[in-house]
Each structure stands twice: as structure tokens, then as C-alpha cells.
Amino acid sequence: MARERREITGPARVRFAPSPTGSLHVGGARTALFNWLIARGTGGAFVLRLEDTDRQRSTPESEAEILRALAWLGLDWDEGPLRQSQRGELHGEAVERLRVAGAIYQAWESEGELEQQRRAATAERRAPVVRGRREWADADLARFEQEGRRPVWRFAVDTGGATAIDDYVRGTVTFEHAAIEDFVVARSDGTATYNLAAAVDDLEMGITHVVRGEDHISNTPKQMMIMRALGGQPPEYAHIPLILGPDKKRLSKRHGAASVEDLRAEGYLPKSVINALALCGWSYDDKTTMFTVEELVEKFSIARVSKSPAVFDAKRLKVLNGRYLRTTPDDEFAEILVEYLTGSGYLDGKGEDAAELVRRSAPTVKRKLGTLAEYDDLAGWLFRPYAMEPEAWDVITVDVKHSVQVIGAGLGRLERLDEFSVEAIREALSDQLHILGESARDFLEPQRIAITGTTVSTGIYESIALLGPEETLARYRSTMGRLAELWQTA
Ligand code: GLU
Image (tube, rainbow, N blue to C red):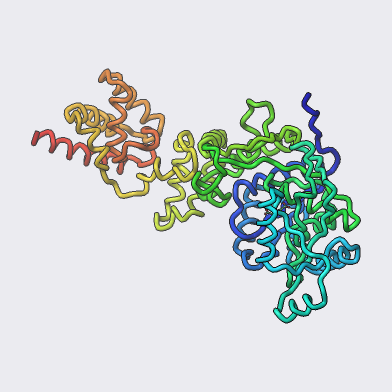
């Protein structure tokens, strides 16, 4: 019988601990979200800790990008950002306490000697774990000094024992210590390694639950050993599944947008991204796919996080985003669109009225957009000087006579129109369509091409209203002129 899964109860103090060495990727954002949901759902706290001890790879740009991405997603933190690099003293004190307790030892082996140990173990079919020699002759130590060797501090793993993790997602996972090497806790320059710093900080910050990617699970017994050796009580753990692309390979740039910044640039709404991330490993009832952030806070449950790898499907995100865009009220949507197009530089050099034109076109494009970046495909013609695209011209010149007839009839009706409102335009063109006994497609597609010069665009009535009478009639006449010329020469 499957074991009953546990739920996190009581206020959880959780943390998100990114290393500022690049963008905030989908996987990291999902970890941040799960932690945030647990903090908000249990009335606990969400702490942000930047694991920036790798001074070579950590950059202020990456740090800024991660903070910006979290803020954009709406994942606000209650404490921090704490910088691990500023906690060196604390980590140093912990190393000293471990030394006094006899939990660590100085190891002098060179990289070559360690490699030899690993090879010998593999040859004997033992796990290739490294253990340093605890006792050295004075002569050896003198030689090391002469060679300029500096020791590292290794944790003295109790090789007969085992560490069990009672994981919220994976159940009980037991690590035999025989397979765990005497891992390094402090480098030869005295700085703490990731495992030491993470263990000390999780203890010191009073973290109650560590929720992180499954790729960290082999670090967990090491961190638990450190905490116990320091006299501390390890927090509880939940290791959440890896995220794969639709091809079941580990999610990467190959699958398209891989970072939150990319998704933002492509015109996804934060709420769509949040919704899609929540479904990376968690599900509510296997059928509901749209959740507001409030619903997620209420419904998220660690007991319903799957052990199997999750799939992040950009196509599904786009469908979700389209749905969210369509449910956004027109005014609000128009402002989101203007803000996005301004931010992306799209409106640069397009004139003073460009933002107003975007606002006016918003209701009609809203129905067709998957992402905000697709705006140009639908409405870009509004901002370009009028030109007939060859593919569009091909469509209306398959049957020149028919095109002259329907475009001419459309022009006739529009010339007699007093008011260029969407309603008036719709009425006039629909009426004409019925008079001619044409299908909507055969009648309207040529009208659309006549004024936009493209085959893809916003709705025809709305497009005409957006252009206004002068420009609309000029474009109709220009198209008619070219068609007439072709007809005569044919
Ligand atoms: N800094 C680690 C990472 O970015 C996080 C480790 C942890 O959550 O303990 O993968």
C-alpha cells in the first residue's frame, strides 16, 4: 500500500537560495515559487539567500537579474537578500567548532593522489569515494610545507552509519555512509564550501523546510551530518522533480525561452508563467489548468507534488497566456500592451501617436494573441508605410476580375459612409456581401488585403476603423488602380 503523503503544517520558514551566476531559469523559478507558496500558504516566511561564495562566477548583473525576475513574478521575500559572501565569519566559526568537536580533519592529499584512490576503488568495485589520511609523519608534513602544499578540511564521515531523509516528496531515502566521501568543508584558503555554508546558514536562519531540486539530494546527507556535528537539528526536506522539455530531455535553451527574463521579453504575463510553473510537478485534480495566484496559495500542497520528472511545455504556456490575455479587460490589456511595447523599444521612432494607436488596436488583437510579442505579426502593418506584400498580392490576383468586383463594391460602400465606427463599417460591408451573394471569406479577405497589404492582420472592420476614412479610401484606391492596370494588360 502506498504510504500516506505528509503535508507541511504550521508556519514554514523556507528559503530560496540561488547562486547569482546566470539568469533565473525555469527550474530555479519553479523552486522559488514552491517555497513562496508554502510560506504564504502556511503563514510562514520566505527568505532570500544569495549563494555568492563562488567569487569568480558570481556577478552583480546576475544578482540584479534574479531579483528583477522574482519581483516581476510577484514572488516577494520577507527577509533578505542575505549574501552568503558576507557570512564568512560565521562559516569560519563553524569550521572551528567542527574542528574542536573532532568532526573534521586536515587532508593533505594532492589531486593526483586523490585520483589514484578513486581509480583503485573502482578497480576493486567499491564506490570511488575519497578519504584522506588522518595521521602523517613529521617528515611528510615538513615535505608538504616545502612543496607549498596547503591542506583542506574534510568531514570525517562515520563510514559504518547511514543517514535517512524523510522526504515529503520522495519518502524515506537512505544514504549509506560507506558511499559518501569525506567531503571538503573548507578549502585550502580557508573559505567554506557550498555544503558547509548551506548547512550553517539553514541552521542559523532557522529554516524549517528545505524545498529544492532533486539534483541536490546527494548534498542533503552531507549537510545533515554537518548540522548534527554542530549540535543542530536539521530541517525537513522536500526534493522536487527535475524539469524536462517536451522531448523528455533536461530543459535547456534548445527548448526555447529558458529564463524568466526570456519569457518576459517574449511577452508572457507573469500570471501565466506562475501558473505554468506551478504545474511543473504539482497538480490539483489532473484537470484544472488555470489557477490564479490566490488559488495557488490556497490549493498548493507538497503532498501532491509528483516524484516523476515534470515537463515544461512552451506551447502549453502560450495557450495559457492567450487565455489570460483574452480574460484581461480591454483597458487593462491596452495598458499592459503599451507598457510592453514601450519597454521592448518597439514604439521607438514610431511617432507621437503610436501609443494611442496601440491602445485603439488592443481590443481586436487581444482575441488573437498568444504572446505580446506577436503584436507585430498582427498589427505591424499599422505602423509601416503602406506596401503590398507579394504573397498578399498573389492572393488577390488569382482571380483579378473577382477582386476588382468585390474591392470595388467595398470601396463604393465605404465612400458613402458618414461615420467610420466599427459598427457602421460592419453593417455596410455585411450588407454589401449579402447583395453580392458572396461568402464572408471571398468578400472580406480581399478587403483586408486591400488596406493592410498583408494576409495576416487584425479584424477587417476594426482595421478600417483604426486607419480612418482618409487612409482607408486612399489604400482602396491604390489597390484598385493596380488591379485595373493588371486587368487591362491581361
Ligand atoms: N545555490 C544552490 C543552487 O543554486 C541552491 C542550493 C540549495 O537550495 O540548497 O543550486
